[in-house]
Length: 238
Picture 1 (cartoon, rainbow, N blue to C red):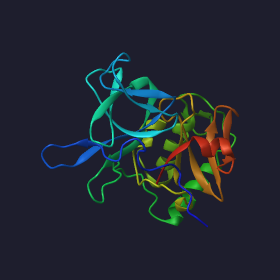
Picture 2 (cartoon, rainbow, N blue to C red):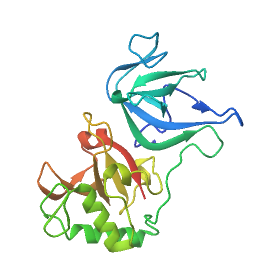
Picture 3 (spheres, helix red, strand yellow):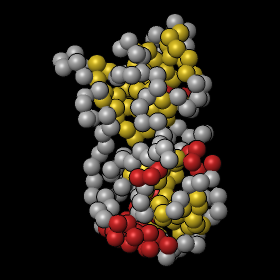
């Protein structure tokens, strides 16, 4: 069976990122177009059109001096500009240095062994049915998705994760294939209408994960085999 990627790990628009004049290397933030958009020669929709981007196309970007526009690199190492509102940053930095294709922040958040992962999932399952509460931090009385992941990992392996899903997705060992997942790993999702990661859960094994669901109003389990969840999955961390 061919390995299944969680998502395309490298940008589609650019094969290299921003050049460093001192050492010839390049790096930038991996981003995804949230809608059909365009890359212009300068930060203006009236400028010369370089390239048309399809929805969900990956690219390598850097922030520009204009908060409404991001720089994006093309294959010839020239860069253009894309409206910042039309792209969503993913929790990855890309570089053309050997062995540094993906970089991430480090943290005491890793599941060091299968036993630790099982302890995380067993603890998480104890709170199935806890009411969903936006901004909630109480595993027993009310909690939201990122609060649930933060409190479960804190209560089991002593991890000190950030509060929001988008911040949490920057921390830990990145996983890029579904078959790499093991119980206790963290999953991160982005809806089509969102500009950043907005949901998270904990992998249980056998394609299942547990999360605090706004839609269902409680902590519950779901399956990654469902196309809607697979389509929103953009990152996984251990």
